[in-house]
Length: 385
Image 1 (spheres, helix red, strand yellow):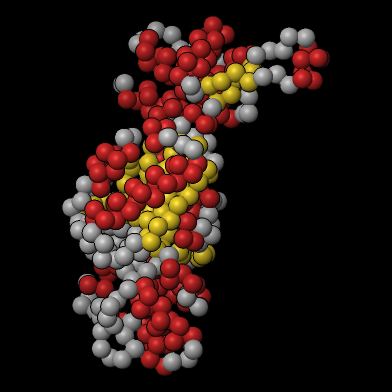
Image 2 (cartoon, rainbow, N blue to C red; image 1 turned 60 degrees about the horizontal axis):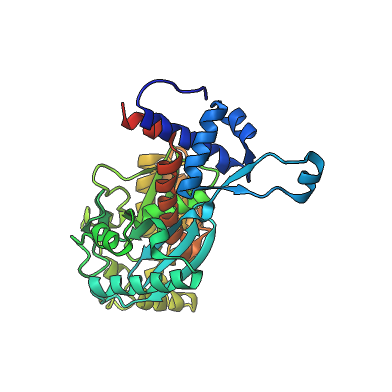
């Protein structure tokens, strides 16, 4: 990148800082000569940027190695990006638990927490449990809350851009909850709230089964399945954030409710929760005819729901996760049905991240936010055009 001249000096400083930080992030440490070569900026410009970044705490001078000092006399000054200059948090909020991951600015994990919570818990109780767990995690890691640069959150439901949950049937008191605003008041930093299946899709693309694919559907298989999709490597939320809500497809044809699908007695299954459904699947594995029929109905509906989404999006890969992903024989029927209905059947794989997928994806959202803030030259230029 050549030297930038003219224009708004403050804009040029931000662009130059982003360019230097990008170069520093790519290697463990760099000399001023390295940075001049890698960025195309002048040496005085690089020196000024390094001085400002050092004062802000984002860059630190690294000591020369002893061998280097003996060989060269006074060694060249070296600098590195301080990944410890701030911290990120990825949060999962679910019916039965709240969990979180803590990392530095490089994405290196420093801590985790998981707290059980009842399905019947109110929104205030659930958020209180979350805040207690995160506070404990920060304390154990020796990280101050003021060090958090961004927090990502994966939540059930349809989520607006400002973090308000527009609709959620999974958690009591969740519909209409200004979740982003509530958590921003707690953590005092940017909070990015996303649908849980969407965050899991992001996680699998980052560190899971979809690292080599940019067109992916992640299926969060559960009582009411949901899905997240990446198209060209970018999360597809839809116009109102409701893309991937395949759990509502059975309503279109007036088909059986989930309570009827999973019934082993002819009467609707009640209560319809993961513990109760797990019993049905355990009975199916033991050979109970009614339970095996219920499991087959559940699998068939999930397969049809996923097929509808695949026909619409034509992904390269479908990743299946969620608590129901462990059902015996789920992947083979899914592959068979996709081959039957789709002109180009996608690959089908199981989640690598398992229960950690949602919190991991939320952490990635927080990391993306900070990277865009610190490193994204293009967005800085576009914002000022």
